[in-house]
Image (tube, rainbow, N blue to C red; front, side, top):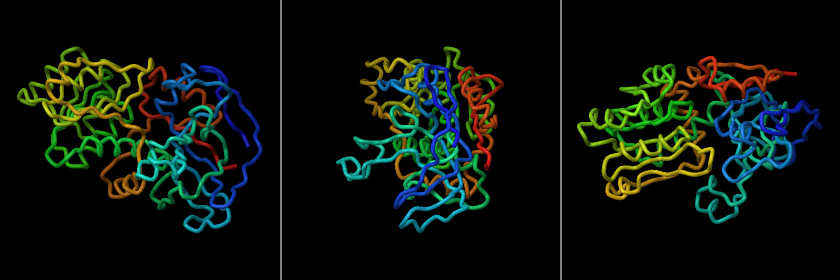
Length: 345
């Protein structure tokens, strides 16, 4: 099978790997769609994400879907030929955090595309059957791949305790920020403010349910306070991976509010004005992927409460996969979400 490996920042290599064989409790997935995520770009652009560095060639990609090509012994809930969404995180299921219901915090988590664990930019994948989710015919392969970032957005909204009537600000409207807007609206938020420097993304935020979409021109906090009669918002989400957005979220939050940090900073540092957070008694939470969200994500899309297709601006064939990373890194051609599609061979 063909596989695409990152060998150094912005440098890929095509490999021919042996076809995987599913073991007991596993399925063989013929990969069909892989989304390019901002976290992939850390490895692609810098050879590092947080404190994890690229030490040998690595297959990137974790937002994935595919078709079940074969099932291993004991697998009964999926059948050959079914389209499935693939959860890219394999927890140990035995550590303290897993047993407490927090597999996203697993001490031994194996996560696609984070060194040393290969991701899904390959034609086939053997994966635990418990971590694939069969989908109805209304889902396309691209829809199914987008369920992973939607799951992250749902988890962030859960952490934010968004309730009916809440006011929300979202600082950064890439794919995750745009999905947070939709998920917050579905959770009952009634007043949503988006902050984003790119005009096309502001327009998409308004289409996705934001009441206001503000430019990040230096006056955004003042405008948020004016729009909320000086109160600030109940929940502020940072989804840009930039400290300016973190600072804005802290300043925009009302006393007693929750501030959710979703983005991953390039320099592995986050800072904000401590006095503002302390005097307002803010609760600052960091979003670590997601947990137990796939069934809810599927239901929200099935019910028409979340639009995934509108976020996918670029469909890139597998043989042009490096171009997808270049587009997303440069934010070229109005890209919001680029999805790499792998044909049936």
